[in-house]
Length: 348
Image 1 (tube, rainbow, N blue to C red):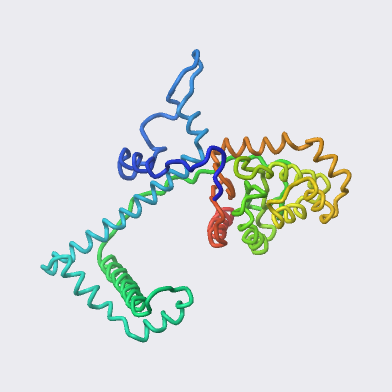
Image 2: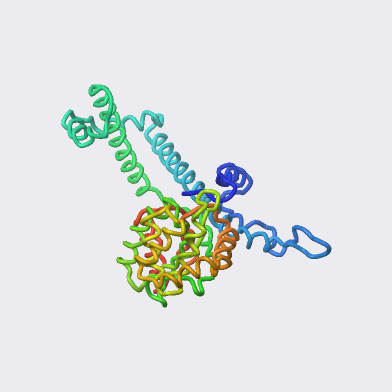
């Protein structure tokens, strides 16, 4: 994902570690004892509350809480597995390594020469190096897969014989409130699922995800509304802001999406001649388009989109809000489908 103004990404890893150490298991940041109306600061008697801060950090806090939950869930699953293995080993009066050897390593089975050959033939066009060493690495890789499958099956069998109750709850889904009035959209105006895309016409990742968005719209039709918001990254793509203004001039003539597609297809070219060429190709009234561009008609509107993206804590493009739920980056179709299907189920 392209990074926005000021460069690098937030130091989220260190923050996750600090928060995970500070919070007891099963307690999310929003469930801390402090009240939402707690006053954190005062400026000439005017207070700034925890609620004010949390609202301003909404997207970041929501993302962070989900990451903390995922970390806890992964560790919890590991600890459950370790306890199941220890209990079974004690029951059999053997050590855990001995149990693992007899029930997993031994029963996983060996890797045959035919399996190695099949994998090698299927992947050799992408492999480099000594053939004999490659085959040994393939054998080790296939063996590790067999061991992992057998381990999963053994642990599942142990779970089926044991009462395992997991009480860790997911944090509430954070949904950002985003204005979309007047923004160009595709799909059903009354669709139960709205995707708001913050995008940059010169961002290669935004260009890469466009075919995926086309698949989304083809798959869901009027059940999804795709809304476009501008977030040109000036430091990375100095001509993208002008392209964004040009897109809005095309929207004035009812040709936003045609112009949108031409901008992405020809990015990052956005000098005056190029923008006019795209206008002509999109079937626009070229003199009217040129007047719109030269007068800076939509400069303030593009800036409002940028301000909104910054308020939401976005640092790059593309970013998507699916019914207010953040999805970051040029994600594959499956990521969109999973979240959209969840929203459609809830809508029912």
